[in-house]
Length: 419
Image 1: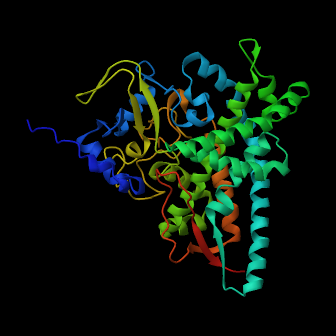
Image 2 (image 1 turned 30 degrees about the horizontal axis):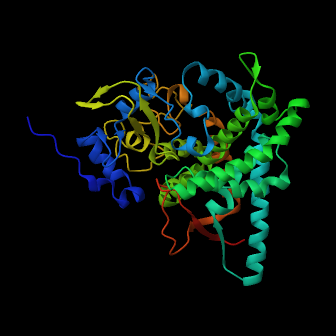
Image 3 (image 1 turned 90 degrees about the vertical axis):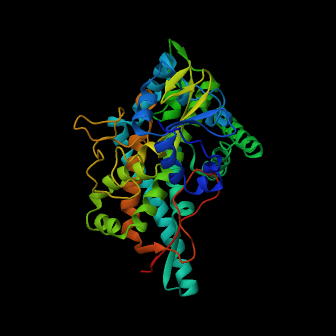
């Protein structure tokens, strides 16, 4: 039997952040379970293994104790297990699925049109002043980072005049998820300012609740007890993460993939209903979240390796969604592929017809609460924006890429034909 190849530590060089997929292929083929060099973190990269680990709540906990999101936001729904997770999820989940989610569609449309009107007016002024032959938009700065956050602020019924403050706090909080100590400190400070702003609103809505989500949180009971103010604020932080962070990257990555593949763009232009399939394929090829962290509750034996009790485990969604054992030609963006399930987002990996689902929203009990909202915002927002900007293309010299692992300022500047 041939000796197992040694893990090359250079696989995780700076190029991994720009394009992780070549490294993930090597790991799937040669080291499907491996300890990342110089760390105590293990990585799982094959689709079947990632699905199994997501479902295995006896051996893996979703409570990695203060790392990643918890380092900035404190304990959130994503980092609870068992009964605590179920009770807390039941408070917020109904707001984002089913009939409640359908009631949000006018909110999404209203915010979409408000952004488009603002953008269109500024473009008209710019074109008139410069007599330019083309319009310009940065999909990230002008649209993707604003639409989902504005929708969430409406869901919480936070005053319009406060929106600009949130557009300052939000990127600081999200950048704080990075391991950089200075960014983490700034993220905590922004989260603290957000919480201070919420304090009087929570008190007022506990006395005089409305139909908004912040009111629901302010009067919700867990085991017969209303939540503490800190628990309510933690939920409000989670809602920003779940409702905005996922969707802004989804919108931007969908536009990148469509414009980088002109045949796919032409297909959705001819039939905008195909945008729903395009969203699903985007969530496979390059979802907003590259993985989720778990902690091993006990020693776990997998592919001849032993993940020790207490070790952090990165379940690689990027790796699983590009597994050639499941998806043919996984590097190709194809909204007509026949090996991906394009129906309702799956919580269990495989559909009953045998087709695999993307893992972009996670799996099992920790499946993304806001999955329907993220899809609706991305599809509706893209449909409406496509009506306004004609013949969009990457701005020359912009070197466009999808959002990858690095947390840093990112843009997607486009040109389009001026009206």
